[in-house]
Amino acid sequence: MRESSAVSERNRYSENRRRSDKAASYDVKYEQEFHKRVSDRREKRLLESILATAGSHERMLDVPCGAGRLSGVLSRFADKVVEMDYSFPMLELCRQNAVDYVPQMANGNVLHLPFCDVAFDIVASIRVSHHLPKREDRLNHVRELCRVSSRHVLVTIFDEDSFKNRLRKFRTALWLKKKPKKTLSIGELRSLGDECGFDVAGSWSLSRMFSGHSFVLLRRRAA
Ligand SMILES: C[S@@+](CC[C@H](N)C(=O)[O-])C[C@H]1O[C@@H](n2cnc3c(N)ncnc32)[C@H](O)[C@@H]1O
Image (cartoon, rainbow, N blue to C red; front, side, top):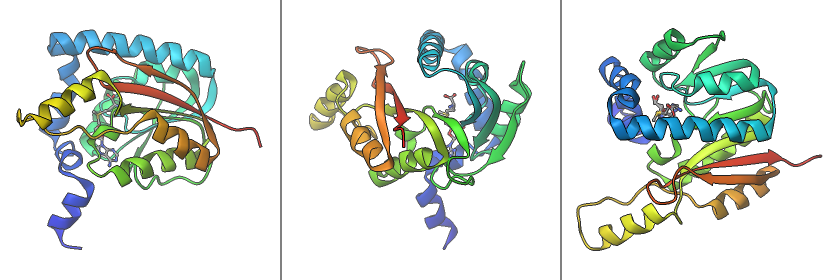
C-alpha cells in the first residue's frame, strides 16, 4: 500500500497525534482552556459514577489512553490497566503522568486490537469514535472492543440524536461552513451490541445542551 493511501486509511487525526508536539499540546489543553477544564471535571465525575455502577474489575484496557487524562479515574476500578494508543509520544506522556498505579503500555490501532478474545474484563474507549472518518470503522471499532471484553465495554460516541448534532446538521444544511460530525446513534450501538452478545446497560450525555458526546455502557449477556 502506498504511504499516502495508508495515511488516509488510518486518518489524518491519528497520524497527527503521533507527532510529539501535537501529543504535548493535547496533554495540557484540558488544563489551559477554561471550557475544557469545566468539561474535563464534569467528564471525570460522570466517568466515576458510571464505573461505580459497573463495579471493580481485574483487567482493564484503556484505549486510546492519550496522555492519561482519565487514567487516574479508570485505574481505581481495576487491578491491572493496559494503556494503549496509536501514538508513541502519547504513550510516553501517559506513562509519565501515571500516579498510584503501574500501567502496562501497548501500541496499536483501535480497529485491530492486538489482544485475544475476552482478554479483559472491561474496556474503556473514550473520545476516539468521533475521530474515525468512516461509519463502517466506527462500527468495527465497537465490534473490536466487544471482542476483547468478557464483561463491560464503555465507549463514547458523538450521538447522532443529540441536540448538538441536530444543530450541527441544521448549520451544515445552511452552508454555514460546518462539516457534519462523525456520529453513531445509541440505537446503532444497541443493534451492534446485540450482534456481539452485549446489551446496552446505560447511556449518559456529557451535557444535553452543550455536548454531543455520550457515554454508552455495554454489558455482556450471561451465557
Ligand atoms: C482525543 S484523544 C483521547 C484520549 C483519552 N481517551 C482522553 O479522553 O483523554 C484521542 C487519542 O486517540 C489516539 N488515536 C487516534 N486514532 C487512533 C487509532 N486508530 N488507534 C488507536 N489510537 C488512536 C490519539 O493518538 C489520541 O491519543
